[in-house]
Image (cartoon, rainbow, N blue to C red):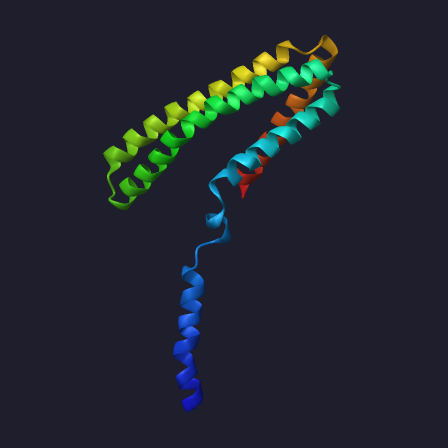
Length: 157
């Protein structure tokens, strides 16, 4: 019994230490996030090349279009992070006026990011041949249907 009582504080300390350890993702280098996005962009370009049969010239134009968009979107990142931090603080203090203000600002930044992406897709669409545009439209319709089905499933759960 004495042995169990003396080990109990050590077990509790071990459990608490394990709970307070930062998650492994929090220890990633800052540039790993950028590398992940660049890798995602490369995979997207490979998929588009395969599915749309892009020419080397179209591939180069697509890299340029989406690279420029990524740079513009990345410029919004610091402000979005700042707003998330401010929003957490406003939630903790139950400051509804500040929460509304931050969410309004955040929606404007999200709209800017969406605008940058949508304009890049529109510019990309213009470099496609009529047959590629037809294929792209079918891919987009499939993606929209798939996303709509996922959202419906989440709502019904």
